[in-house]
Image (spheres, one colour):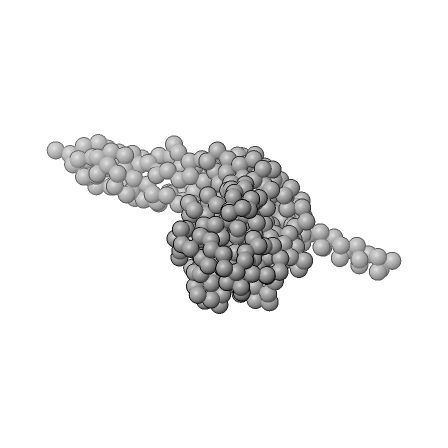
Length: 351
């Protein structure tokens, strides 16, 4: 009987731990998803949902997001790449390159992002940096610049490695950065394209399954499981979702996006906030102070509060638009942003 009670307690503790690791940004337990690790963020970095999002894991071919942006930032799309034998024949997904063939950087990027060609990854890496080793240095340098603190790369394709890992939080940060690059955004959004005699079909089924999906990258190895990074935009609001080791990734991404867009909205949370401060020796007795616009993606039923840092009084003259103080904005007692306060009108000294 004691053993049964101990096992029951252990089970309940495990359930509690799972629940605490699967929460929205405002603390409520939300969705039951299959992913071992996951995150959903607004493109500006605000976390809407997370589940062990800072824990390191194998990331398979989602690695190629970094490979693509390093190539894009160091090469011209029109550059010609001659395929060498050492680029060919890697295990896993392939663009089926052959030694002696020539492709542009853009064509190899299509093979990299749409059909996850490991051979395309090697060709781009060696063309960009001379060797795979030097390219990996660029990958890790960029990860450091983006403050991807739980990430380390040891290859450009994502095949399993002891020191090749990332986490959902870092991959979401990377994807948000990459989606600001027009070429990357255009390439990752392609459902299919033609390269020579090949028709490349994008492995990312979310492009047709999920309303508003505008890009992403799949990944899979036996050790890593199914990995997926995606971006979805609806009504001008862009979200990034990452799931790692997720047997039901398509549905989990759709579920998370639908949940977020139904529950949250982007709005100016400093709108209609104003203050009145006495003016000493002015032609009017009071100065009106307004808040600069501050857009935030927050729950529809969120309670917005604020604290203002303002002078108790001000001496004339005052120039319209001059800084008057700072406004801190809170959602359900959590700080969600700061914005400047400014004087609405110019006020001259009294005659």
